[in-house]
Length: 178
Image 1 (cartoon, one colour):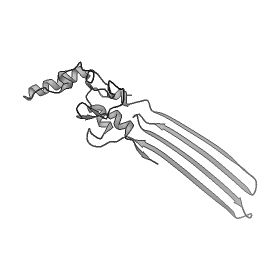
Image 2 (image 1 turned 60 degrees about the vertical axis):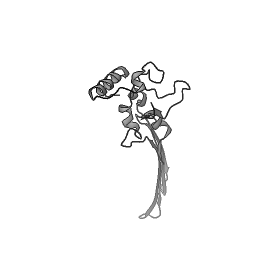
Image 3 (image 1 turned 45 degrees about the vertical axis):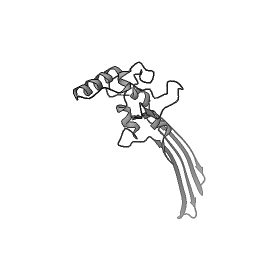
Image 4 (image 1 turned 120 degrees about the vertical axis):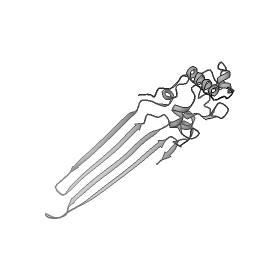
């Protein structure tokens, strides 16, 4: 997939430092002043981590038949779509039945029934970095890892609770519709 050009950790630290100095502010964030610390010695490409190839599977089966007085048709469907953002999914199940009865030479009656169920899971897409996995993909600093360097567990916050981890937002807090 196509990615937006973003800075790596070295470029990000340099740009952040220049911006703070140009604004007359102190450069005091540990992730800038201590780039070799295991918490900040990363160069995470959030887009590569959060985007995946999108796949779709669609399966249908139908059976039909009948006689002069009666005909039927039954079809089943299943679709499984894996959208490009990790933590999202879309599945759809369907069944359709058609029954036709010939009551007389000139009168027929029929029954048609259709049922569909959709299970959809999406990620949070709020307007701030604190709640939007999508926005976090391009705004989370590359100096952080989504995982704790000691335990390997997915962390919720990056830095001193300055940023939310977009991977945690997408995988730990899905929004599911049935």
